[in-house]
Amino acid sequence: MASMSENDSIKTKKNPRKKNVGKGLKRSRGCKVFDGNQTGNQTVTKKKRTSVKLSGTKMRQTRGIQHPSKKAFGFDVSDSLHLISDDTTLPPAVHSLMDTIKTFDDSKPIYKHPFCLYSTTGTKGMYMGTQTVSNDESPHGVTPMAVSQTTLVSDFHNTHTESLLCMADELLSKLRMEPSANYQNNGIEISEFKTVYTGNSTTSPGGQSSVLTNCKHMGANVIVKRAISKKDQLRTVLEAVVHLYVEHKHPEFVPKLHFIAFDSDNNLVVCSEQVECTSIHHYIMKTLPREQDQSAALKSMLIGVCTALETVQRSGFTHRDLHTSNIFWDPKTKRVTFIDFDWSCIVVSGKKISIPRFLYDTTRKSYGCNKSVDLCIFMRNVVTTIANQAALRKINLFGNEVKKIMVNYQAECKQMLCRDFDNDQEKHAAFQLYRSCTEDGTIYSEYKHRFGIQRLTDSIEFEYRQGYFEWKSMTPSNVKFFLVTGKFLQGCNF
Image (cartoon, rainbow, N blue to C red):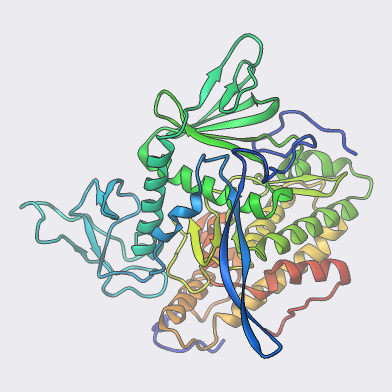
């Protein structure tokens, strides 16, 4: 069928614990929140001036702004937040996220391929133009790389993403001045800060990084992540910053960050508490089938996740990669624990801290404040996991409530993507998302999320793209309200 132009309007989206299960970290009962009065473990407080009026006289008072403990890094991370730029607009020419930044010179990035620049002329919605440019200093004879018409804006740097890596580079320089991490693999465990006992550890390699599980640090069960390349170290230190701040605000929902430091081999080491309960993926696959009331057990878990997300989102935290292996659930205590923050974002003192990643468009309006993306990814993963198990597909809650949640989500997308937008970028992005979910890629054919998932062959990537917008139907408060009452706060009319 004929395809409509993008400029045309669309008129028609207590606790028996299993040891060493999965990856991640969990705060043990014996661990205490750091005491701000203890030496070397003080909470940094900066003063913000406010004004009050008493009996007609304007008086000045101070309010404390709490920052995380210095212990994990060895210094105050907030001192580097000023390096983050708020400018998320696309400059005329940009570098790919795949181009390694070797270092920074006066806060300016020095790229491995300094002359490989891409023009942002003709950018529409989620996608870039096709033109590649080289600056005047480019060596003679350099052949520009080709760019597909479907290349995403999120594949490229802007001033904000470069500034995040600039802050990361400064943090790495400061960490090199701190005491290094040490390993002990035999004998009696030495209980010293930054000394990790690895005698019983298991190594899980992962690209340029490796993960050691079943380690010990000062008597606590920990995992150790090591970043080898400069590119991975920049990302890893940003992930640790996000972890630090979300733990500071909500220690009940994340593992304890023990420390981050370089080791003697120049690897960046992140030591965190190991979660002892099970991931939700493991819970659905192994534990849920044995539950006497599977619907009640599934509902309890879903409500627990919604409640946890409601809480952390109020502090400006977005996980953004919340598939069922990155969230842990204890059915006895109803405790939720989030792990792996390498796609996450947190807003601190008005600054958005995230890790520049593929499919993470920092130019969009909902960047850093999207309240639906986490539950979209999580619920899609839950549905996929259960649907692949014949015994679980018969669960009453899955066949009714869960499916209604996803149908309601789809209905909002179809309706919202067809409305008028004041912003041209959002208008084009809506058009592109709508067409990606139609049967033949035109606006005239049937709209279903399954078409978009089939086209990408990846349900999680589908939800990453859907995360361009916030969907009222998939906010934690709306889904939780439906699970409890059977009614949507945001129903079919959005």
